[in-house]
Amino acid sequence: SDTVSVSVERCDVSDLAALNTVFSKMIESGKQIKGIVFSVFFDNKGSMISATTPELLKQFFDAKVTSAWNLHKVSKLCLSLEHFVVFSSMNGLLGSVGGVGHASSNVALDRLVELRLREGLPAVALQLG
Image (cartoon, rainbow, N blue to C red; front, top):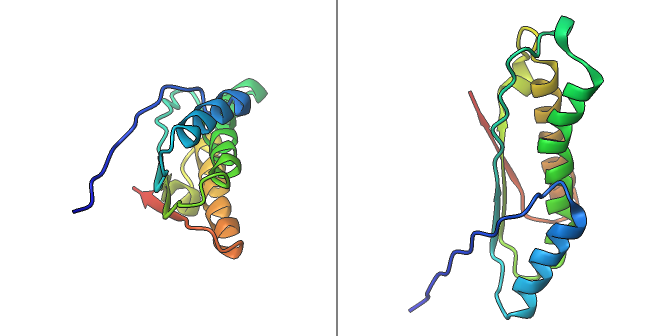
């Protein structure tokens, strides 16, 4: 019978070097990475357009877009990868009053999934409400 092992590694995924270290150690230890699930909760209080600053947009993008891009890059080390799942939001399709950082970062996640699919890599975006 097949056995499954789940590893939870603590790492700032917006830091590509740290992420590479985690993935390299797992692969070197003989672990086959079959799936990556990426989800971010970002409290966007005060993200109305009038209150949006470059710093706030950078926080959104580092948390969601930079991190997802880094996972995309290191996932190419995982020859056995079957699943690459990102939790996105309907906000990217429908928008929201003032939620410019949230909406735009979710659109970027959706485009990353499209890129991966065009490259023949596994990917799915779950657009939650």
